[in-house]
Length: 182
Image 1 (cartoon, rainbow, N blue to C red):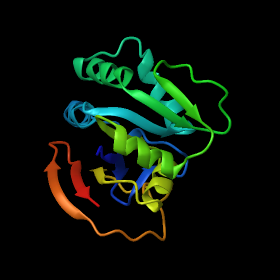
Image 2: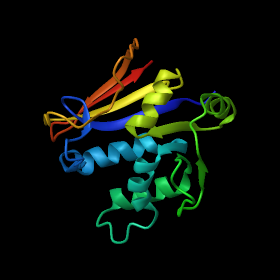
Image 3: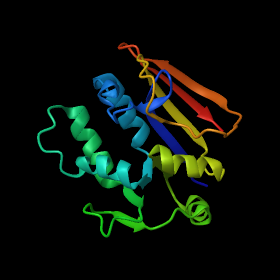
């Protein structure tokens, strides 16, 4: 059975963006970006909420990226299937993309059972639904050395999960990767 994996970059205080919705403080350097490329490479299907999908669709036609690590990520993203959960989008402008109006935990369970590759989930709101439904198998958090004081938290409130630490890695720029199994 495929795993559903939630990977994100956060501030030390657990936010994916600050109170203004900005996340420039989490812009990965070459080392962190290459690490994320390797995390994403085996993902065959990404599950996104609308906002995360709209942000990530940049990678469909990113223009002049300036470096091989960015070109590599664009190729990884373009090759993956995408399922976007949105009640407001009428169509998806990127290939290999399917729209779903509602997040259906049963359908995601079935997808996990039939998928030949692991699945990724992106967006704190959608990930919260999947976590509450018991669908997420692993967490990858890259903590950046910054405290932003508020914004969108990467995990839902009121949820308790026991985790097993599988790996940790420190990056030269001060970020730290934590990998947990639920």
